Image 1 (cartoon, rainbow, N blue to C red):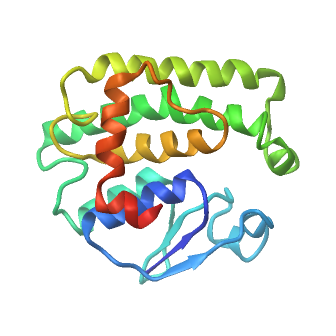
Image 2 (cartoon, rainbow, N blue to C red; image 1 turned 180 degrees about the horizontal axis):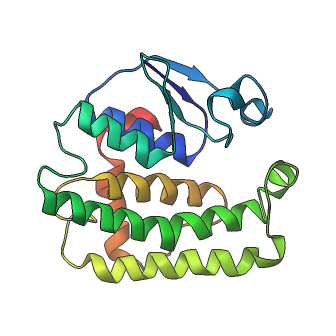
Length: 205
């Protein structure tokens, strides 16, 4: 089993998940700047062209971050990062989906339509005319999450979950591409400090 990984927030998420599990996997670095992920032989493994990809012992190639994390959770249940009970899993998946819809998708599309346009314009459909609105949507999503967080230490409850790892990887990414966390989101700022001090965050920085 080996992980085909690269720079970027999606590989960061899976590497955070692996680190939180206390696992160590062989890795293959994919040069996405040079477009290695957009041509063969990588496309034979993942025709969507995204990283990371987890290659299992039987040759199965798992792409898409949540699918990879779900497989790792089932193969290595402890510590539970998606949930130890049906209720916990449902709550984690609910918040993970909210993070994805409200922050990850608009932030990523906003980046690809602006700062990332030179890299992505010949690879993916980019929306430069919508970039500012997409970035605004991501900021609004973060503000909504800040209000919803309340007194919880983590996004889905009292312990770190997949929802936290997803949000953290993209908050960190946003800070690098002109979409920093608004200082007014004080609950999320404190949450970010807690996440940034975790060994998994330090190990994958």
